[in-house]
Length: 226
Image (tube, rainbow, N blue to C red; front, side, top):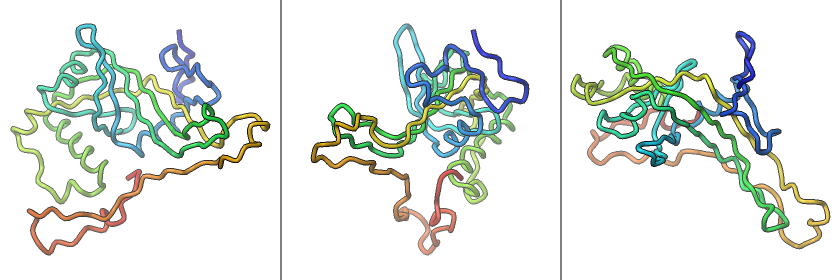
């Protein structure tokens, strides 16, 4: 059973598979929040089952509107399984901080996470596959597609592109400090939050690259989301 969201709702429906049951106050089905988390990351973990055995595989993705696109080798177990229509679960997590508590068991992390349940559809059209590949490249670095060689026909044939309609999704977010009782703060341990932020380092030029090409501004000032 699921709670049917109103037409044009800003929330995903709460289904039995996506409803947050542990710490439900941290759960959210807000479409804008979920899309914001997905757009900041670009690596997800995909869980699926093959012959009764569970697998979890990290892979890249891109969100385009109300769909996620995945891509990989046509020989990939992940892509073959998802391309067959098998159900799967996809997770993205952003670490925002370490929470230091006055008790050993009270330590935690601040995070934003998304879980997507669904089935994938194989993109067969060469033009649609090429458009998805462009979206992948520009999702990682906006404007990059225009500066690099495009996939060859052979490369496109060897690549499977999957579309995942975003139908069932939920977010879970933790913020703030430790939740221990006031009495626990009588000790001498430092308590608080150590924030984490994903920031790029100094660009390292490929030694095989053409000498003298300056680092593009969109790499020098890289940030997420793009």
